[in-house]
Amino acid sequence: MYGIIIRDTFSAAHYLRGYKGKCERIHGHNYSVEVQIEGENLDNIGILWDFNEGKELLRGILEELDHSLLNKDSPLGSLNPTAENIARFIFEKIRENLPPHLRLKRVIVWENQNSAAYYEE
Image 1 (tube, helix red, strand yellow):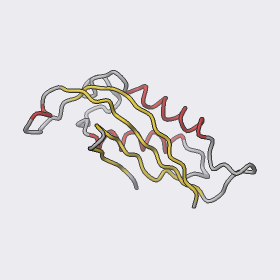
Image 2 (tube, rainbow, N blue to C red; image 1 turned 90 degrees about the horizontal axis):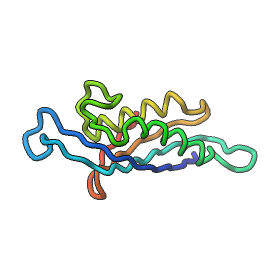
Image 3 (cartoon, rainbow, N blue to C red; image 1 turned 90 degrees about the vertical axis):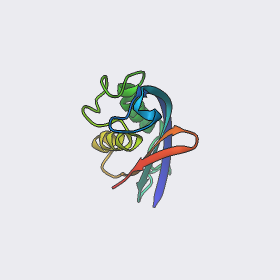
Image 4 (cartoon, one colour; image 1 turned 180 degrees about the vertical axis):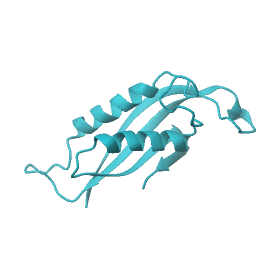
């Protein structure tokens, strides 16, 4: 099995509904998103998938979230904008647009350098 990893960032504000503590108040993060993609076969020049195509796909999804209040101004809808729900949202959007010979393994969303959540199926 071969794999590639692409990363990008976005900035957004949110607050956690139903949470008791500081995170129930509006605050922001400079999120870092890591996408892990797998496949069985390389193309005729030895590439699983062009990094640039993956970065373009991820960038388009993150632009929907960038510089927004995730509770109100984002495509997350009524979901509580936890890192876990953001990871699943990004996972589903990437999976919809991934070439059929590839498998999306995992999406990791980092709120800061010490805290992350991921989604995989």
